[in-house]
Length: 109
Image (cartoon, rainbow, N blue to C red):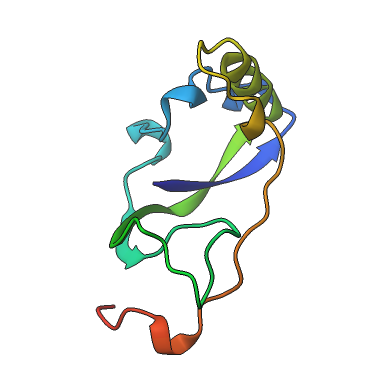
């Protein structure tokens, strides 16, 4: 699942439980208009020659961009540090994979 945010310095848009994942909020239209499509995993460990063993992948993406407070992400990082499992590897930016060659793109759109 994926949601797109514009990060703002305004706690009107504070969501304290990002660690639980996807935000559904009917009042603000979050998690309501969803595109579902097949795709592939992310990250730079796979490419056009090395496929992911997790296949097929289905993505659910919120079609709208939503505002969210910067402090929501501060809270998410705090919550990640408080987990029993070590999530320290997920507290920094990661690389992304190259775009897939059009020959490999699903034709079920």
